[in-house]
Image 1 (spheres, rainbow, N blue to C red):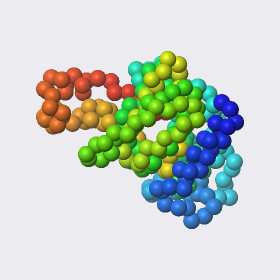
Image 2: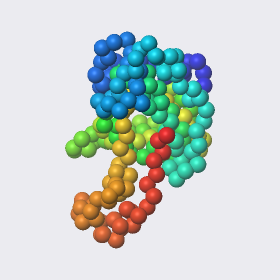
Image 3: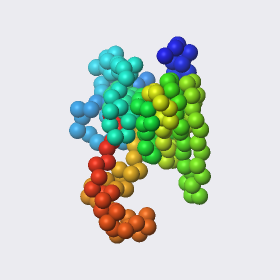
Image 4: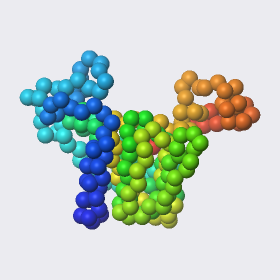
Length: 220
């Protein structure tokens, strides 16, 4: 990856912060105290006197991830769960690795807008609006950037014969992810097959088969 691409990646992250959806911090930082038993919207702050550089640090995002799964993709999340110093800062990051013809299946981020840049390879990406469900798609090449608005279903597919890598900035310290197929057919306990059969106009045997499948999560 050239310095030019890395600069664009950092610019993308800065842009995502400008539209952050999380509440603004009221102090310089609020390092998450993940050991606290107090439950708040986000994380309780660690005593700032106890903060250290490691609270703002994550290493190894340059390393390729394993894409040897059914989806042919791997998403490495870098949010407040990996960097406690992101607490209250309204921003996070992800690396996306794709095998040839790998897919990051249709999903949503309920708490954040995503801005994605391709570092290597080619990706076919898109999102669907709320009703009446208009589809916006684009084929992205190295250095191309695409935005997925908060809460909308979107996907990324490597339509090339070589691997692909992308980096994404998200406007939340913890944007969340709902993978559509997993949520509908892999819910625990399962959604009634009467509901799914009627909603998707399928017979119950097909619904039961879908619910019996292993719905994998490619987010790490």
